Image 1 (cartoon, rainbow, N blue to C red):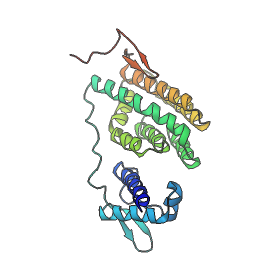
Image 2 (image 1 turned 90 degrees about the vertical axis):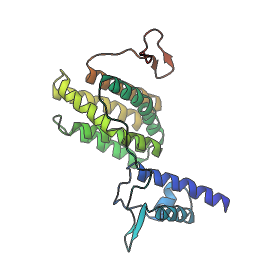
Image 3 (image 1 turned 60 degrees about the vertical axis):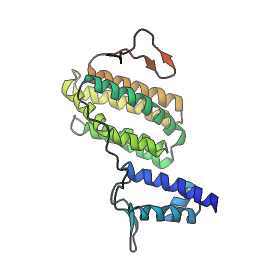
Image 4 (image 1 turned 180 degrees about the horizontal axis):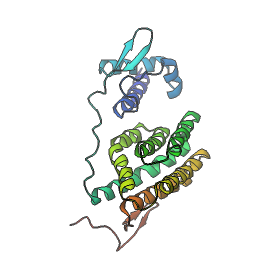
Length: 248
C-alpha cells in the first residue's frame, strides 16, 4: 500500500507539472488510464489515484463519454521571467539558456521516443517552411520546446515555457537589427537545428549537447552583433581574466 501511494504521488507530480507548465493547456484531453499506466510503468489503480488528486485540485474534470480534460491551470500557474529590457538582460538570458538547453538536447538524445522524435522533426520542418521573419520566433520556440518534452523531464518543459517571451523576443531582434539577409539568416538557423536533430536521431548525447551549444552561441552573436567573453563555458572551462563583471 505504501509503495502504491508513493508511485501515485510521483505520477501526480508528473501530470500536475504538465498542466502547470502549459504542456497540457486548458481543454487538453488526458490520455486514458490504460495509456497512462503503460507510459509510466504503473498499474491502473496508481493512475486512478493520481487522477483523483488532480480532480480534487480542480485541475481536471470528466466529460461523460469523453474522458478527463484539463479545466484549469491550478495554483502553480507559471508566470514567466521578467521581460528583457536591455543588452545585459539579453546576455543573462543566453547564459541561462545555454546551461539549460544544452543538457535538454543531450537528454532528448538519450530518452526520446519515436513519437517525440517525429515531433522534433515536425517542429524543425515548421522552421524550414518559413520564408521570412513572420512567425519565425514562434516556430523556433516550438522546436526548442519539442526537445524539452523529449527530455522526459517536465521541469525542462516548464522552464522553456517560462522563457518563451525571452526566446521569441530575441528572435524578433535578429530580424530588426541583423545585417544578414533574411533568407541567409533563416538558412543558417535551419542548418543549426538540423545539426541538433541529426545528433538526437542517432542518440549522440555529446553531439547534441555540442550542437545546441553552437546554436545558442551563434544566436547570441546574431542578436548582439558582437562576441562577448564568458567566464564559464560548457565542459568545465573557466576563462580567467576575461569574465564579465557582476560587481558593478
